[in-house]
Image (cartoon, rainbow, N blue to C red; front, side, top):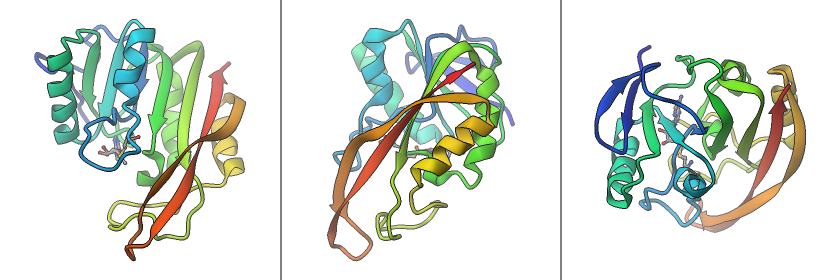
Length: 197
Ligand SMILES: C[S@@+](CC[C@H](N)C(=O)[O-])C[C@H]1O[C@@H](n2cnc3c(N)ncnc32)[C@H](O)[C@@H]1O
């Protein structure tokens, strides 16, 4: 599958041509359209890294992020439209991979982590925010949801199978919102950090 890359919400490029570097996120968050849990990972990282490449399969999500980036005049944030289940990211281009609340949308998380691993430079870091185990009511619309959260041990095992060395595992934040039955529920999100050896 091809990828479409953009910089600063404007000019288009081709996967492997743009000057990748800094960090990559699987999803940018922060479109402000759904819920208060959005961490704005990509935009939040910008002051701390040279560049961010925000990756998402959805062109619409990236378009919304592109508008924000344009408004902020943030020239160091690129977007890359990519299905991480099918595409391989440019090898050795990134120092960090960061993902928040994406993995339960992927049927085969273990396979995706193995795909992502070569995109990191040696010694690079990955930080994954996993939805904790829930009872299936967390998403009002179950379309595209493949996991009712994850066990911490499972996330760690998948990372180790993808040749990462797990460093930290801890609760990162809690999301409170109405479930499929309209009842408010709180679900923890845990963060696993790991190093590419
Ligand atoms: C719940 S949203 C993530 C929200 C955001 N990261 C946050 O923390 O609020 C899930 C995102 O994952 C993206 N996504 C789902 N499957 C994907 C795939 N195979 N490749 C790339 N992005 C994918 C969706 O398009 C969607 O934008």
